Length: 148
Image (cartoon, rainbow, N blue to C red; front, top):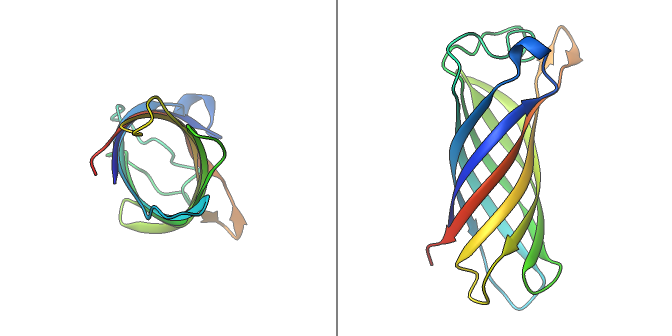
């Protein structure tokens, strides 16, 4: 079980709506003898802005508070001793609306015991607006600590 503090920058948005923020992530993975392991990610990300963030992109709905909560399930693969890649898919909650979300990530551990980690991720959310999909997402950089 890992706890990450993430910083991120929105992508796909109009120039006016680009924003930064931070969030917390709890990542639970089942360690086994295989290079593959199942993974559960629970995240809560907040933006620093007070204006509506993604008015056109999230199905024409305003996100005044700028909070995105995600529940993702997926798999991770141990590429090398200290390098892991993963892909998760699940549900994203934005202003009480539910959307499909997905997140690929790359993770690096600094020590043999995997206590301190750094990761780079892309959270991609797929809302529908007027019958077509308008993507929304953010790039994240996080530092984490293995709890147990």
